[in-house]
Length: 576
Image (cartoon, rainbow, N blue to C red; front, side):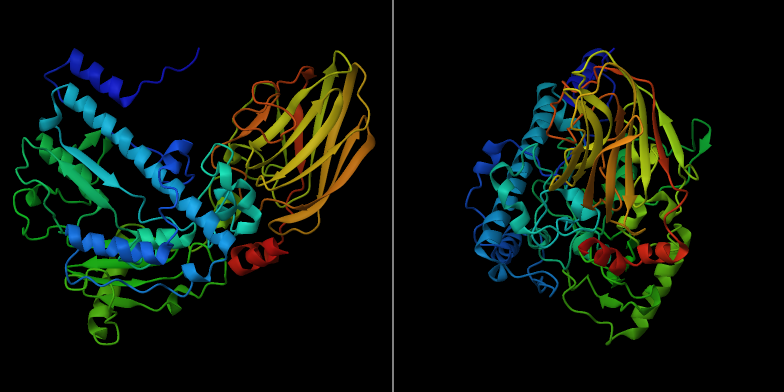
């Protein structure tokens, strides 16, 4: 039986039709503007040529518009571009061409998203409840995202594995950028421009460029002000208290028998009638990948520990340099006062430690891509200690955390099958999809194995003759060169104990194949690992008895585990 998917618009209509006197709550979370940036091509074309001026100029234009609109103070300063972010003028003509397309795609993605939010507003209007609905629209993604790297990413999974893409590698995808054939993200320069006037980007939680989003609140029946700005410090934890106070609901002491801890946030209702009301959310810590900061009564102390796109050796947390900003007067954190007011800095550092302890932030973990590996990250793992997994037809969608880990180690895949004829085709087992993964399959009676490296490089080996009808044992073997992340290795296919093909995979995906697609037995669902078969037409036409994946107990020595934790070693290994 197929699941029934109801749109939020239809759900609201149904709720209001059946119980018109009762309020309803909708949490409408789109995939935007998070990567991958997918949008119909006509939206991209609307912005053709609109970003040819580059990110430095766009940032200046944005800053001027922010002041004109009054969304930032008149005395706010535009912070300088960090040396780690390239200037637009330093880019080659090909880089500029590709990168402009990336921003055109992002802008189209934003417009398409706004249209969907507009549909939500229209549905409320048609139901006659818009004026008395508290509508909160949080715009953004924790600061614009820099995971795309210096030149953007055709496949965001490369960036999440710590691998930086290049324009020369991606230019062949420029015409279908933003289509389902890509998994794209834009270059860091665009993220930096999008975070104007602040320093840095998403993931750098120490600075406002990594934590700040605009919020629109609409409730005509209660809020008399129109188009006004409220600048009191507000955090995402304030949303739930605001909704409860607006609805006149008490704080729930217990939910399904679980005692509730108090809200960390503060209702924003006190600002609705008074734009100059005294701030109530007075203290807030921030931390992500070791980037950390503390806000308190108009001051911010912060330290940037790492940069999202740079896989380099990191200093000990104790060696980080802290900065101090009086944001009540210096909105964009443009003027570091650490050397001028060391006593205030020390006070706020102590407050960060207090808040970090209270909110279970410690110990701080500054690892990035390594966290994908449960064994390295110290995360509970369904496959912990397993060196063998046997799966059966019908088992599909097994996520990487529910499937044996074949990354950075030698392994074998063994599949006893029964064939009705010499033309058997279809997938025996596949993991992940078009943007990285591997598959063991048959086509016209011949056995194949393909390793898909992020959709940019493929290694396919196959037997030379079709298998005869009857029972057979198909075996694939991978022998890694070195027990280090991303290492290549030798591969071979065996049929009934005899080697029939061999090859070499130059490099492998070090930490993750996919954020969405799992392993399938007997079929390849969602996107296709190989271009050698089609979606919906790759179900195995023979019989699979079972599939067994065997790995060595551990290819990582303690020394190698330490090298994995060193991001510089990771980067060096990947580049090699």
